[in-house]
Amino acid sequence: MAPQRGHVGSELPQHGARFLDYLTVERGLSEHSLAAYRRDLRLYRTFLGQAGVDEVTTVDVATLRGLVPWLRTTPNARGSTYAPRSIARTVAAVRGFHRFLVAEALAADDPARELSAPRLPRNLPRALTVEQIERLLAAATGDDPAALRDRALLELLYSAGLRISELVALDVDDVDLTLRTVRCLGKGRKERIVPFGRPAARSVDALLVRGRPALHVRGPWLLCNQRGGRLTRQGAWKIVKAHAEAVGLGDVVSPHTLRHSFATHLLDGGADVRVVQELLGHASVNTTQIYTQVSTTRLRSVYERAHPRATADGT
Image (tube, one colour):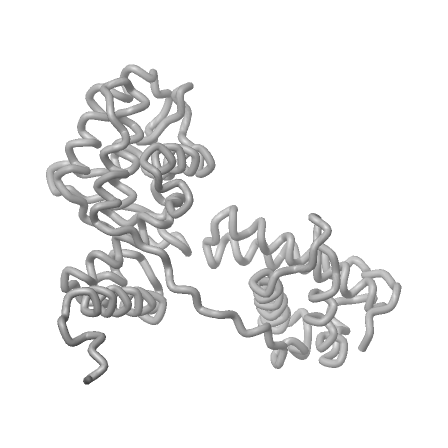
């Protein structure tokens, strides 16, 4: 069904607000994820308005078949078309929204049950070598408060495999330097305890003893900005990129690269995939198993460089 000009009544904003409340309270999604859902629902509302649908509870399967083609040809805020990954995310949001409407008895039927997103290539995560990690961790030098904070930040990202959102949410009481563990809240507000190594413990101790007092921190947070407030995700991202660029790794390093490297190096060292799953806070082992593909790729590369018969043609 080709979209035509129309409008959407009050149902979608009302039901969308209830859906977002559900995602906040029941699913415990982060503000970053909630913002993505809000954008997707606004986009869906535009589609329904152009399709001439007055109320979201009257959407039918035929109308929804036009969603993906519409997304492929509709310009986004930057004037380009939506990427396959963005389309897939919007489709997932729409499917979740309609499932919610049925579960809450706000709709009798789920027209999105057969809605499918474009198939996405599964890109292997990029992991640094151990030598590259060492270069990056050595980049934060000096004893001034900012350097002490940066060193603790880099060490914890790699040593504990934390997400950047988990890292900046840490309070001082979440870190146990005696046991060398950190307590964090992952996706869905699921709590986990992750160990970290001695270098990270030394860096955090230096931050607590000499760094935070000099910055006049005004709250319980572990990592702070120059004004003493909690460090933001964007601030932490800039710190990682600055040190990566200083050692010639700016094009290949982001905060998540350190998490990828954490998982890959554990598996390279013989760690069980189930253990790595728990350390990363993945709900499903299937998510973790992508790192086993990375390790297999690395093993193949090492084998082909080192074995005398790896590339022999038999002549």
